[in-house]
Amino acid sequence: MTDKVKELVSKCLQARDMAYCPYSRFPVGAAILTTGGAIITGCNVENASFGLTVCAERTAIQRAVVEGHRQFTAIAVTCDVKDRFVGPCGACRQVLMEFGSDWIVYLTKPDGSYKETSLSELLPLAFSAADLEED
Image (cartoon, rainbow, N blue to C red; front, side):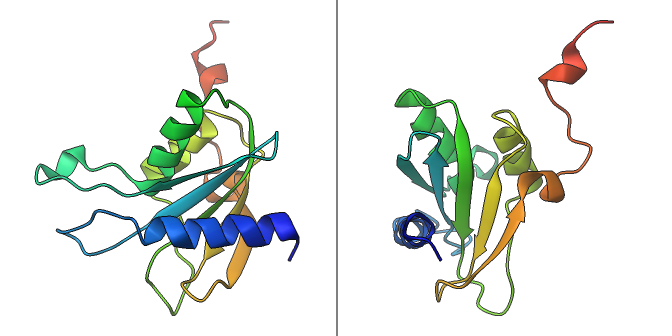
């Protein structure tokens, strides 16, 4: 594990600890690596009106955009599930795809072990801005 991946995994675990999830009790943390080397974190933030809940991955993307970042290379995502690797929900996969398909995704267990995959593998045949272009 490279130092940057180790830091990314560590930061997603720390972000999970900040999750506001009084309804599901399912904390999720995410850490995004920008092309410039910055790491931006996010956690899930639930709401009593469940549809207004924001996932960790989208919180991290929104924070990154506010800070001026638009290009990313990787994301680490974690939750409290110990016996298997859990990936981002479909909505988060689509939001990540808005910023490119070449993401490395580290699906991370609470103990820090991870499985490396890619956004393209998690969201094949994705809808993108290219699909909005007129012929």
